[in-house]
Amino acid sequence: MHKNVFVMDHPLIQHKLTLIRDVSTGTKSFRETVSEIATLMCYEATRDLPLMDVITQTPMQKTTTQVLAGRKLAFVPILRAGLGMVDGVLQLVPSAKVGHIGLYRDHETLKPVEYYNKLPADVEQRDVIVLDPMLATGGSAVDAITIVKRSNPKSIKFLCIIAAPEGIEALTQAHPDVTVYCAAVDERLNEDGYILPGLGDAGDRIFGTK
Ligand code: PRP
Ligand code: URA
Image 1 (cartoon, rainbow, N blue to C red):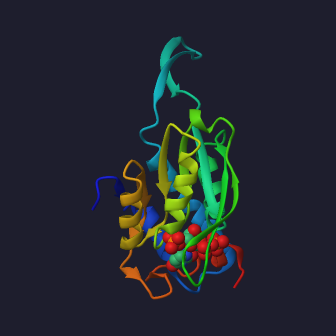
Image 2: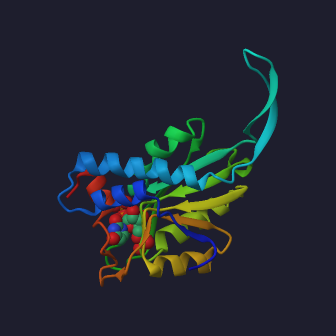
């Protein structure tokens, strides 16, 4: 495995991943569980956030404690399916800014097509975590991160739930400076660019559009 790729094998994440893979899991439960997985993954992906010392007065005495340093985070979901992870990560970092990048995969070419782009104005002072449950060919993630890089953030991480080996290869080749977090690396892509075994179309399952 690439040194910048982390597979989160925590039992709670793996249990919830099984729930969303299951074809009999309905929209409500799928949506809630994606959000819960995002919370758990965010906890781990923010492990290296910088801290600074502050003096705190407890009811007993003054003491030196720590808070997050600097301008902190921006989350950038890739529309649509990345939206399903936003509430979950904001549970842990409620003051983070949220940008949006709209991309869809053309079903013929499998290439991403950009249709929306709105990032926080001060993104160059922030660490960015790009969100998308699925890393398949990697085209969407590669393009989204290229777009984010134009705004010069302090750093970029990519948080997905299921990755295909093909997507990891493409993403780490195109953006070797980006740390990738996932809950599973699956077997392969099928001829339509879907991840096997995967969970189907994440956007459709989150929003109930199929
Ligand atoms: C899905 C998924 C990723 C992309 C992954 O989105 O959410 O963004 O496919 O595929 P790739 O790695 O081959 O680019 P989709 O294009 O289906 O759009 P949607 O989220 O609007 O349904
Ligand atoms: N996008 C999805 O939503 N699912 C896949 O398996 C591949 C791309």
